[in-house]
Image 1 (cartoon, rainbow, N blue to C red):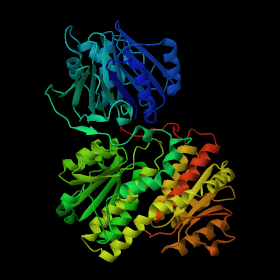
Image 2: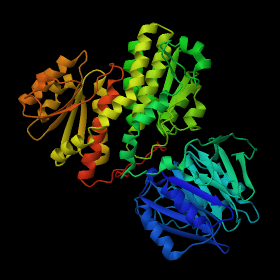
Image 3: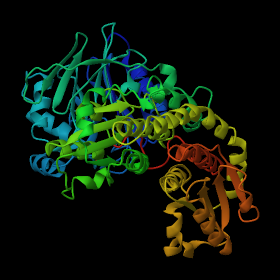
Image 4: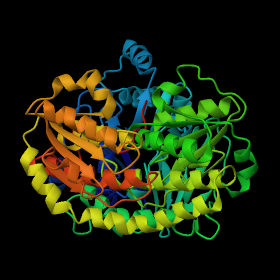
Length: 611
């Protein structure tokens, strides 16, 4: 949530900051703003709406300066309007601050400061912090000391960046619960960003702040301290992906690009990890922890959103092939219900960004109780990657589209690799393992076959673009796919959709079915196929309009369904990947036909870093 960029160096900061914001706009697009130290003060320009409004205002106002900060907002406290846009400034306009997170004691700070004459012009929690800095500042003190003093009085989550004309030529950044990194430039420049996309145009070397860190950035580089002023050292990481990875590459939208990148992203998650002769997977991130894994008696998988759907499929995989009991928990509920975490439990956290606030909080609760933790994340160097005991990366490349596509299918392959690795050390034979490896190798080519259905699915979307509701049905491994398909449709087209186990339809949802209700039924040829056919009969009897996703000719469905989407057949463990892709395409084309903003759906942001 929210994107932060900072730059101090020899160049004009304005264009660099705007470029960084463009690459972070997927984190929030309710408003945007910029603050530059121009030699005589702090010049602030901000606008409500998307970044294009700020760009136009910057062209008109022509702010200048070689040190500045910028922000693109996903609204938490206060409506998405110009007064609530960041940066927020002190009463005299000589301090500017941008913020990602939620300050939990903001009302208390606001009340105290209002009582001594401070005037607030926004509804945000952020403004309380900038006025608190102003209140605590003693003439002659460096900015970083005042910021640290203020943050010691703040409760809640924050990633902030601050500049001031009282102490020019520097940016102070700080983190507690919201991701922030330093970009280490090579030409006398230092940058800050919510993630590497903000700085990749100028440097590949980044340093991630830990919670409780603050840093001073200037022309000489950076210095990191903890909130109590002690000097600390953090590791420099190299960003391995190219700038082209966060460009659209000729596609109309990032979402469509990322759907079509899935054959290559699946190859990347498997590269160097398959051992066909041994029927096994080679996972460097967990290789040194095999003794711990061999003692696991129970797995708790925690995640949010699309990653939670991946977790449900991980439950099927691990229980079936590794014979370990698994529970799947919404991360947002996990730590609030006093979960039972006994010795022998492994908590597995799944997150594309590695920064999801609820998932991180659940992980920390497990660690606090002395429980072993594992992560499956995409972003190298992310907080969950650093704080879990061990884990694996997806290597799927940056995912910019707010609606997750390639990360989801990569998570499923990663979970299959983990399951294979654990299973081979328990009950899974080399023959069974070899069959899974061969199926994994075939998977990217099979996804390419599914993508050839794009025009067919676009025509299907045209036929149903006016629908107000959708129902998605699946059984077994296809039930989480039904949930994911419904979520995708809701996220980008704003059509109400629900996913259900097919057998549960007659326990309530069947009341909704009539000739105006499209029903997507996931019906691959598997162990429960005939049961799913029975559900199709029930829908047809109520005149529902049926779209069936099948894996063969399915001649028994002739005359019973309105549309058939045929995908390749693979082993049951991996079939959800092939049935998911057409649902991604359907959601995309439905949104396009309805005129929705596919990459920036309303009220959503890519990485949920606030609770």
